[in-house]
Length: 81
Image (cartoon, rainbow, N blue to C red; front, top):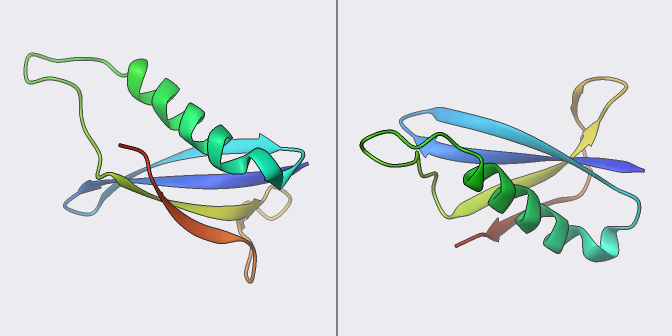
């Protein structure tokens, strides 16, 4: 099973991270988009609205044993909205 880190950019050097574990990388794009949409739907909505990150997400392969991103691992950008 592989784990991937999704970096959400809120601007002004503010980031948030999601982690997705998949067994096959065939459906990785759909898993990333599902995790992002679920995170956005569960976000608290204040009087100014929900915090909205930039539309491009950065996805990197993550090593759980070392607790950091794998060097030379799979990396791509995806638009979620």
